[in-house]
Amino acid sequence: MRAKEHEITESLQLTMSVWTPLESNPEVLTKYIHTFGVTKDWVITDVMGLEPDMLEWIPKPVKSIILLFPCSDTYEKHRAEEQKRLAETGQTYPKDLFYMRQLNQNACGTVALIHSVANNEDMLGEGILKDFLDLTKDMTPEERGKALEADKAVRESHQALAQEGQTISDPNEEVYHHFIAFVNKASILYELDGRKMFPIEHGATNDETFLQDAARVCKEFMARDPKELRFTVLALSAAVK
Image 1: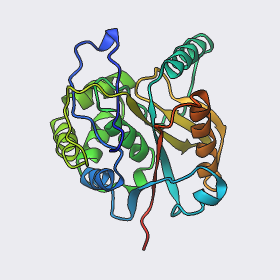
Image 2: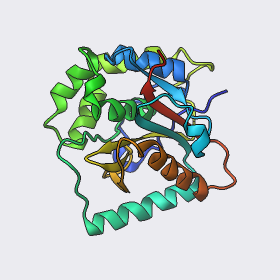
Image 3: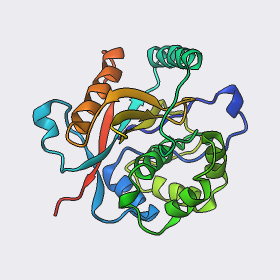
Image 4: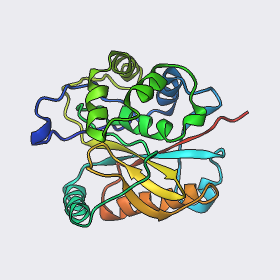
């Protein structure tokens, strides 16, 4: 059974709509991004290990890394401390970095995929995601989250794909995992998490080192919860010809 996404309901989100959880299933998620309008040259694939020799098996180029992780007490403490620090010091990021808040419960899989593709638009053709990005290009992250909540085409695609996993999906089930994305924008590695107030910088990167740099940050997530085994790493990468 694959782990599913999780969004803990916060006080500001008590009226959020509830979507059915997505599985971390590469075949289902690949079908989803193709439904979005991503060309068949790109797929979602499992990352079987984060050591350099294992990363070599992933088809190149890699455009995004998606991490699914448990929302443990340790993680929530780290998130609260990080948010407080960034709120005090301020946070800036490139204007063309697409970032949105998550206002829909259980929608973090979709938000992570949108973050992955929206910051790599060269892989995107006509379709429902391009329509959404055109609509929201000048919006704030919060306005984009509201626009997603109201977007019937994206919601229906999410709901349809959520039924295609290996387990029976229930929008009301209590699950404890969360999807986020890592992308390279302007030679900076960014963590994009719709539950956070800001994109998170993780240092310099480039097209050649992005996969290794993102793997390093994924290891940091794992190191904060050394007894926790329920982590899944996926890559948005070139399809094998």
